[in-house]
Amino acid sequence: MRVDLAEHTLSKEVEFALESIEKLKNVSEGTREFIKYAQKYRQIMHSKICFRSIEDSRIKTLKKIRDWFVNRDKQKVGPMEWISSQCQFDLILSIDSFLGMIEFILKKYLGSMIQPRHVLQDMLEGLFGTIRELGGDSSTQTLKSYGHSLNKYQVTALVSSEIKSINYGKANSIGTGITSLVRRDSQKDKNYHEENKENSNIYQKYNARLLQLSAFSRKIFESILADNLIMGKFGSVSKSLNNNVNCENIRVYQLQTERYNLIEDLLYLDSIDKLLQSWQNIIKKIACEAIPKKIGVQWLAT
Image (cartoon, rainbow, N blue to C red; front, side, top):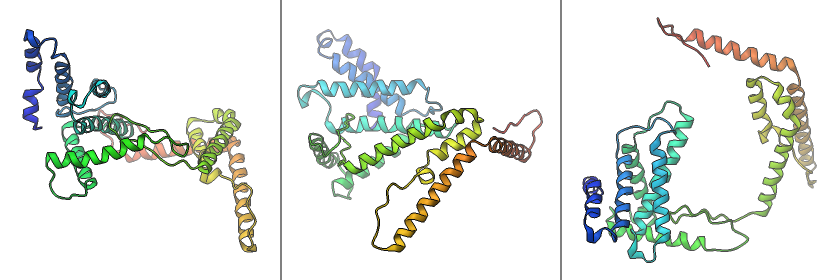
């Protein structure tokens, strides 16, 4: 649907006109609600006003719009009582992806600005390209051929979500028909739980000492303790028929043990905490001296 056509069709004027017609007042309640939420969606996503914070009130409005469309889709009795599955898919996916992108960018890159009008256009172009590829057709899509391609993908996804087997995880439907269904590996699950249990025990063991450190030192040691590559240990290594392999395994195990003990010793040394604080202060001083001074402005290095 063209934006200018949507602007005139999904408008408050049309909503009020339907409400003012006495014969249509009762039967048009659902249509008026659809126009209201669709118009709010168009206003936000076609706007040039940038998002600057995750506290923006428009984010709550988008979540409300998404929830309304998901709930109404579940309430339909027949396919003729609601919008097409293609429209529902595009709408929910565009809202969820936009909200996820805003949360990621504005949290990771403070001071960023996101203009929804341009971002939405890029996302939809990427979506249409993906659907076209799934349909096995590289030519320019018509509305009809796009619908066929999307239907094939949605049917496959919906059927897979109905699979009930202990070998598969639970289907995670978000209103788009897309589900994440991954074959479960019992050995990987076991290893994952064992690693989490080991990490939890490490934090409990060193938690009292970590609280005694400065904020900068605590952050460094927490990242080291959580790094499996640094703190990981081999379990019982099975013996190999090759003696050279056995020797290498023993050397690696000894190296890991020595490294583990070294980090533990450094953690409890007050001199290391003071050294890290001193290093942080030196870096701050270098940063302050590198920043050009401006009259009337105080520059602070964090």
